[in-house]
Structure formats: C-alpha cells, structure tokens
Image (cartoon, rainbow, N blue to C red; front, top):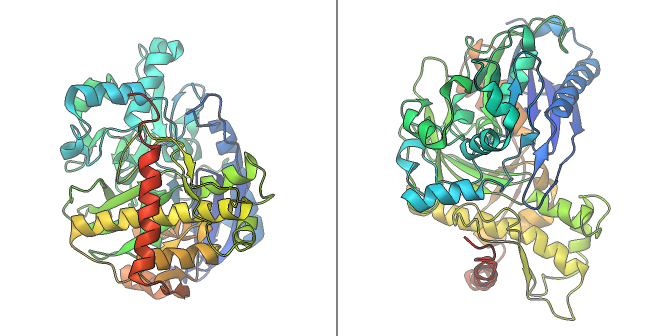
Length: 507
C-alpha cells in the first residue's frame, strides 16, 4: 500500500451516522456525523426512517471527504458498521422501504415472542442461534412486518421483489447500485443477531424460518466480516464518487471489540452508547451461557473459522440520559448531566431501573418497566442525575458477574468506549462498583475504527493483528476507591429496585 492511501468506515448507529477516514496509524484524517430522528408512534414502538438514514449517510460521506481534503480515489477500502438488530423490508424494484425500520429497542413483537416461549420455552432456539427468544432480535420483527403489512404480503408472491435486511444490508445495497443491481448481503455478526442463523453452520436455519413463517428468498446472503469478495464496489455516481471495494462489515458492538483489539480469548470490552454492551472473546468455539448472556459471532476473517463471543446486552444506558434531557427537561444537553450529578454528594438513596423496553441481559424480562425507587422529600434533580448514571454501572456489574460465572475468567480490568465514557463521574463510579480498573483508549470511536480495521485487513492495508495492536493506546484510566462493604450496600439496594420493576406488564 502506498502512503497516500486511506481506509473509510461508515458507522450507522442508533442515534446518528458517522463517516471516518483513517490512515495507517488509525488516526482520523476526516470525520463527519449527523443525528437522525427517533420515532415513537406508540408506547413500546421505536422506529427510524430508512430514507433519512440513507440521506444522512450520503451527507456525512461527502463531509468527511471534504474535511480530509483527500482524493476519494485514494480510499483503498470501505468498512460498514451498524446498529445490528434494527430491521426493514423494501421493494427492490423501486428502492422504497415498505416500513420504517423497526429499531432493536422496539417491543411490539412481545406477543410473537410470548407465543414462541409458551410453546417451547425462552431457550428453545438457543442451541441453534445462541440467543434467547426476545423482542430484541430481528426474526420476530420480520414476522411482525409480514403479518401486519398487506403490501408486503401481496409482494411476497413476486420472487425477489421484496427484500429484508438490517441497516448494513440497506446501506450496502444502495452504495453498490440500489435498484441497478445492489448487493443484497449481511455479514455473519449481524446475521447472528437475527435469531434466524445457525451459529455453527453460519447459514439460515430452515426450521426456525418455518416457525416464524419467513421465506428464505427475502433474506440476504451471509458473508464474512472481513473479505475482499462478497460486498461489491461503491458506484461512481454514489456519494464517494469513486469505485471503492467494500471489504468490512460488522455489527456495532463486534466492531467495537475489533477496534479495541480484543483478539485473544478472554479479552473484554464494554461500549457505553444508547445501550450498553459488554463482549468477551471466546475463541473458535461458541460458549453457551447458563447465566443469562447470549452467544454471538465476534467476527470472521475471509477463509477462516469464525471467532465467537459471549455478550451482555443492556437496552438503556445513554438513552436514559436522553430521556432526562428530552422527556423531563432537567438538562439542556447530554453533557450537562455530569455537573448536575456533581451538585450532590451521593444518590440520596434514589435508584432508577430503566426497563423502558423490559430488561435484557442477564434477566431477559420483557414484563419489566422502568421505575424510580427510594424517593423522599430530600430527593432533588441532582439525585436523579446521579441515579441515571449509576443505573448504567449497576447493569454493567450484573453482566460482568454473569460473564465471570460463564467463562470462569475474572477480568483484571475493563476496556471501555462509546460516548458516555467521557463522563468521568460515571467511569469512577463504574470502577468503584466493579472493584476493577477502567481503561479508556486514546481513540474513543472504536466502533468506526473496528469497521475500518476489518476493511483494511482484507486488502492487507494492515498486515496482521499486531499492527492494529500497535495503534491502540491508553487515553485515561480509573481505579476503585470503595471497600467491599460499601460496594455491597449500593448493589443490594439496586437489586431491590430491580425486583420492584418486574411483572409490570402482563404476560
């Protein structure tokens, strides 16, 4: 590779879309970001406008290129990362979505999941998919769309006219040509989040498709996460104005694992974004959790065996800060929460359980709903702000404990990334409640960086994992200051609050 070549990545997340351009050392030479709307049309429903996401993607690509001042022809490869389970169906002849994208947080498929659980139990598909039956995953969302959209039902009679995908599938289809022959593909990590893929064979499972009444013909082709073949090229008339091979595609949390260079068995990271996601690399053999975690594909390089991970998924973390800002109006911007929380010395015995979409790992309780516990006349908005931040740390502690039980590995430190890790108060509390050092890398945008790394490895822009590890540097770290007794008191109160959140929604 010549020194004037670069790697680009698109990071399409729950709240925004970003494009980055990086050099050999992982330094950002161009970056642009734009938020999109969160659509809450009914209680429990969370949607995104796919056209808005595609338009934003085109805009941030052009802005990142302009900021970098590089010739797009010098972009050697492109990687994609996305918000995983969020799902849509569209007409391949027109490019028109047949629905808003149903976001991973959406709970409208609860009746479908209840039916599946009632017949066979929550873990009926776990040996095949690595996942419990939950509203979180894409398969029930696809079944719901087919059942509830007459236009989709009608078009099912026209083979290949309607196609389904997660957001990576949608963006790659448009980038590679759209209605003029766009590639209909999904990488193995995103496919592992659909509840439709056999996690060992890495193919769609016919029995589950039959159970959910989903035709295999509408599903994308599953390909490795890092490969020179399979995704196609961006079009000259597209937003890059250049033909660039798309060589990387990873779900956002797997991309963050990759960007944090967690390439060895036992490596662990936690991403603090809209939700919170803790992953541990478990090597070439899938590890099936007995403690409420899920089994997922971490990544797959071209012509190599897949690498697996166990994951603890938390639905609401940064989204709780947004709720405090947008719904309650207690802060004007998200960064204000730290100063508000610092206005009090502790949480005032106030605990918030943010079960807006039920509770994910390790409890998997769709009947739970959010509560605020411990309120007195002493409680004020500063205590609420503290409780909001601490809710993320408490949920993370539950996941870390479950991960220790499953793996037998006690982490010596936790690598962190995502937008919330700029909050020093949260990170110190996380260290205190875990009793572990917290390590923040120099580059926080590890999700986008991981997609770039996957794309670059495929074309030997980076020759091996060691070159990527050399790019990783500590930015800041926190060490615990609490004793075991204090940690236990706080965590016991949190668990009491969680118990009070359960059973709110009738099964």
